[in-house]
Length: 416
Image (cartoon, rainbow, N blue to C red):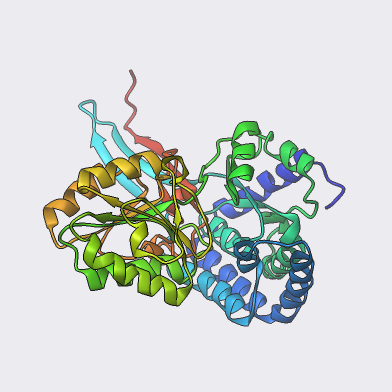
């Protein structure tokens, strides 16, 4: 496969997509179960490949966030297999219908869901994406081309090998799940020019990668540049609840895109809430970048300038600002947010409704952790990505986002 050009890889994937598009739900689910079983059986091989890549990453001074994404262990591999099994139990969107209307001339109009065709996934040190994307694309009737970054290529190939074994058991072509074995950037550039064969590109990784793909692709791109998620503590917030949401959103897994990067506190809550925050962050060793109205509550906090808000730290680090009211909080989010996930903690339903209706984000939450902004947690199964652009999908993308609708018109010989 390594000698094939981008055009050949894309053409073979397009041919394989036709083998998947018309499989029944039952057939697809049998194959998915085989994929989950094969990944479990391949755990030793996957861990061996991953350990070698982790050693290389550590010698290259890879960031803690990147190392966390790269690292696999038996529990995470089991989670990959379990995520595929969750997809088995999800409704198959392909073929679903919705009636539009019957026209005065008697023609009946409906829309039916069909696969997109070929999805190209471009990702960095996220080997779990190999399994998630492969399974989601397969269940939604698509073929997928997986282009993993250099840091995780061997781990991803070990996962894909297991999935290929499952495909072979059911007499399906390996090209249904194509893994690009060469991480060369020029090959990636050639790949995203293949608009004749590829229907959608989904990049997952750093902002630089996503901007590069967006600027150079001839294929439509789902964008998710970064996750700058805020928690706003309203004047009527339950402060114990607020602290739990804050600690969970920032501390549980700080290197992911749905972790909190900004805390906004209503000025009427600052004196009571910020000492609670300071104690919790001291315990969890969270670095604080504080505005001039909040810095006095924290020992060792760094002052933050206006232009430095909106950072994606991906680390135990957060920016804190005291705001006058809800309007000021929403103005801050409008200026510094990334359209990913925004949270309000309040006991006042009117404030919650205003926040939900006016904040521009793919996921808006009221009294719930930002960490629920995830395909699995939102009932989609394993997600293929999160869209912060409004190109047919907005927010975590599951099966339905990998399909489109076409019109089906039924008549009795009507002519125009």
